[in-house]
Image (cartoon, rainbow, N blue to C red; front, side, top):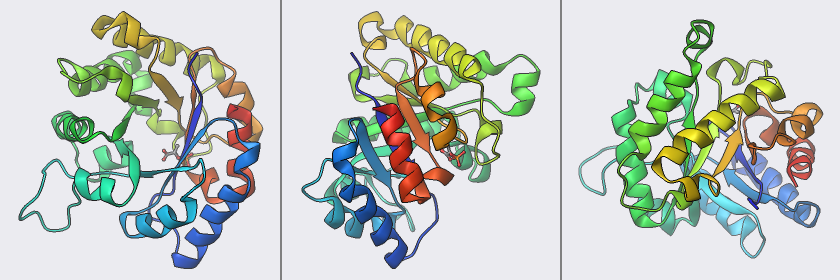
Length: 248
Ligand code: PEP
C-alpha cells in the first residue's frame, strides 16, 4: 500500500510574512491530513519554514539543486546545503526548469544521482507539452525523461518519487481528465517495471497540473495516482488543506 503524498511547490512566491502565515496555517491543520505533506519554498525561505514545521509531521523540500557538490558555482545551492537546511525532498526536472532554464535530461540525471547519494528524496517531474501530446508522443517523451534520469542507478528506486505533470496543464487551469492522467501514470509504472518490477509497485507517482479542491478527489481516486504536486493552489491554506484531505 503506497501512502499518498501532497507537495506544495510555492515557486518564486511569498515574502517572509506570507510564507510564515502559509506554513503555520498548514501546520495548525496537520491533524486533519493523513497523507505525507511536503512544502517547497524558495531557497532563502527554507530555514524559516524549517523552523515553523519543526516538531510537526509536515516536511520540507527544495525546488531545485545544483548538479555540483561545491566550489566556484555562483548562485548554486548543493544537496548537502539543502539537507543542512532541513530538506528531505527536492523537486527535479520541473518543466519550468526544463523550458525556461534549458535544463537537459542529463542535468536532471546528475542532480538526481547527487540527491540520492546524499539521502534527499527526489521528486522527478516528467511530462509532455501540448504539441507533443497532439502529435501522439506523450508516452515517448515521458519514457525518455524517466529512463534518462533513472536507468542504471545503483541506488534504490524506492527513494524516488515521480510527478507526472503535463506541461499544458501547469498553471493554465486545464487539467488532464482523471482517465488521461491514470493512463500515463499506469504507463509510467510499466516503464519503472522494466527497471524493477518490485519497486515499480512501491514508487509513488504524483499528478500535477491545475489540481484544485474541486477536482482533487476524482484525480486522486485513480489507482496509479498517489497524490499531487500542487502549484497555484498550494499558496492558499484552505485550498491546500482541502487537497491534502482529498489525498488522505
Ligand atoms: C506545478 O508547477 O508543479 C504545478 C502543478 O502548478 P499548478 O498546480 O499551478 O498547475
